[in-house]
Length: 307
Image (cartoon, helix red, strand yellow):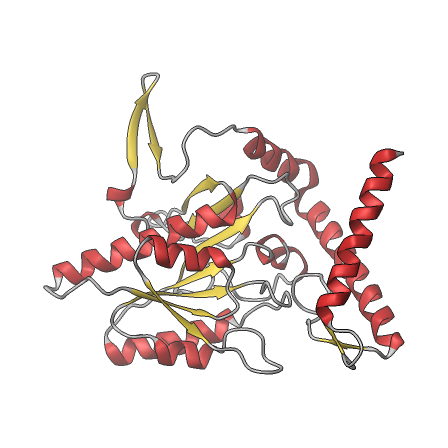
């Protein structure tokens, strides 16, 4: 169902595969491992060294990408951000790609301001570079937040498996998938994008049970909850909820703008949130505002619990 939502090819020769995870952090670890192993296999077949893999991302990535790079010995090459541009620049990202790049990771919903990175432009630029170099550098889309937003309120936006170099996508069910914490998903374009040697086949209760995971025993309640939400709400239900979130975001944005005290640094088209900075921070800065809002939220939560 999620692969269909992300426009995965569904022909006879192409079948998407995927796995439920403990949030997008585990999903990113699994996707990164698949890219690393596939790159290593190709390099060995060509008689080339495979001991210095790297991955290209923006400096705005979530910490789980740094964890992947450190835990699995992959160099993290980050595209620096600049004032007024808080996402990865596709042109600079492609310039950093070399023969050791296992993939370029784009974010659909930056943790800094909720902005969607331009995956379409990244794909087009990378197609050109691959043709010129003979490489086949792929793309992974970290759609932890945006994966359950874009299909419903930005259906024409090309960021998913409609783009040929997008080989895998992760999404968090416990964000806009509307499920309690503890569930994420990673989907591969087709079976060839997930190396078979990473999959364990377990004979469990007389049947083959393939597994590719970093966690061990885990309850199925969140998987059931995700299935229930998809069935209960359907496309129209999710679209109504995401449109309502967007409407609330616009109201909050307009209210902040009317005060004349804030610069809005988020985009209307993206995750439905409002990121802002102070126009004048001579007396107070953004960290103080954040701290006071956090205290207010905790006070309200305590009062609600006490009542």
